Length: 395
Ligand SMILES: Cc1cc2nc3c(=O)[nH]c(=O)nc-3n(C[C@H](O)[C@H](O)[C@H](O)COP(=O)(O)OP(=O)(O)OC[C@H]3O[C@@H](n4cnc5c(N)ncnc54)[C@H](O)[C@@H]3O)c2cc1C
Image (tube, rainbow, N blue to C red; front, side):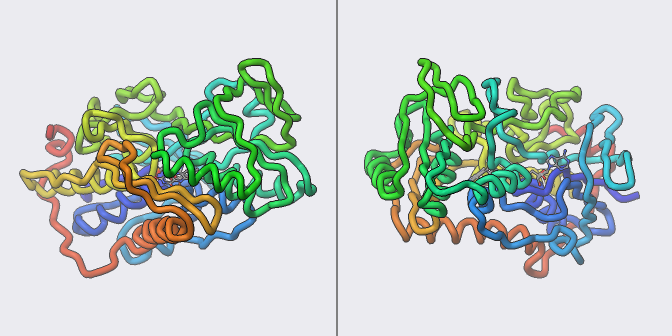
């Protein structure tokens, strides 16, 4: 009987892991099933573009995996039973259950409301495709002069505010951030950011804590009101509650705690990658939720699974570190902030059109590698361990 690998989620991390496993392991020995709620691989890093009316290239997963041996199952995961090694699903035919020998958990994340009242009722977000499409529809119906407030001054907030302001110069766009604008970046990058905000007419509310979202704007921690016809909430990501409902060891965030091979510290047949996994990066600092982390996490998990199943003694090490932060500021501007391995800003950076182009190349490269899982002839190794041995192996 084949060894059943089930990959939950085909976002950046899950799709990369599935493709790499298909490249590494012999199809006669392995059955790889990818379960994803949507029919397409969604370029989540482009959700601000989708929200502002741009049409994105489709990457149909059944086409992506055609001829690779990977089975694509469009379904929603409702629960995982890590003791019985089963996954509960629902699709258009109803409820179902599938069994695995190795599980790769990569269900990603959604917008985090941090318990702030009114976010669920009144705010929009761009953490996923359905919510970005909802915002797209709302923005399309806004009349000139309408106010849009983006809450959150992290990477997603900066990208959202600038994209909206560039696409809709007729709107009155503001950004509220808890700290100073881009305060983790170098002085030069911050200066560039201020220039772009001024050029695009974005009002920046720094050191502003939003305590409540209402239908007509937000109320800040110090009692001020910022009016907005549309509030876009970009104050971080939270994982889906599925992992926390299992007996897996999870962190307070609900992320699955993994070792340096992305293997669950409590269940050796489970791996977690991308936003859903909590792994240490350089200096023991947890990797942040991002593609920049999810991609090497996926490489690492796939290589570790392949090595363990094929009896290799040495497990290859993926570069679990950072190189740069790529921030788009509309379609014609951006910042590439070079960083240390543990994600602290270094003096060097790129700005302007060159940075925008650089970021576009990075995004296209990531999507291309996912949609071409087996781009060249590869040697797919035979499985040598039994299911029981694999589950019992410790790194
Ligand atoms: C607007 C925006 C811009 C960003 N820009 C950057 C950037 O420039 N650089 C960067 O590094 N990061 C960026 N990020 C963060 C990055 O997109 C995420 O960290 C990354 O997508 C995480 O990858 P993932 O595979 O873990 O999750 P995802 O990409 O979210 O994929 C999860 C997959 O699981 C599926 N899924 C979820 N729940 C279920 C379920 N119950 N059943 C079945 N399927 C399910 C989803 O449909 C999805 O396909 C950005 C995010 C946003 C929203």
